[in-house]
Image (tube, rainbow, N blue to C red; front, side):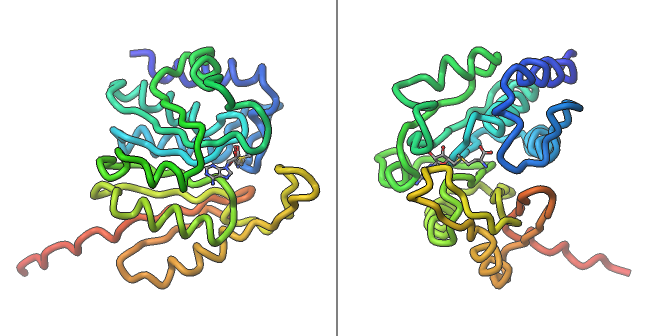
Length: 223
Ligand SMILES: C[S@@+](CC[C@H](N)C(=O)[O-])C[C@H]1O[C@@H](n2cnc3c(N)ncnc32)[C@H](O)[C@@H]1O
């Protein structure tokens, strides 16, 4: 078994692309530390998702680590990566497949669409999602739209992660004229009021919040 080695090979490959070490996951390029990336990889190794959906990524930090975890599990899972490439041309015109393959990750299907378009697509209702990573447009409204659309498609035990949940930065990623404020945290506040959900923040760097349906309580044990 060389699964541990495969992650470290990926980290070495990722070190060639400084852009992969940005965007608020608490990475440290100099020390090759993944920050929250360790958690994403570890969670995906633990949950062993058959289907992971990732909404939005700058240069693929999250898709690469989840893809590595899936391939290190038993290579039977897959990722649906949704990104219309609004920030720049990086994901346009089928470039994603070649890009991910250059890192040895081949379990990712990219759709150059918005999440709104994907949830309207013919096959959406067939999806059974084990791992959902929400990292597209970091507004309260967009997070609500995505989570509410995907909630019925979440398999038992599935986990949803909201990145940038501990951030109020003014982002200019879509240009200075489209400057907007991160308000993911407001939607996360709303989710805390749902008795059937457990909500856990990792307030590290720009933060990630884990959301999962509450497990059924254990049966009382006789004395
Ligand atoms: C730049 S990333 C955010 C950075 C992220 N924290 C990371 O680590 O990569 C945001 C991405 O979300 C995508 N995006 C914006 N609106 C979206 C939508 N409605 N559906 C899906 N993706 C969207 C953009 O194309 C962009 O690539």
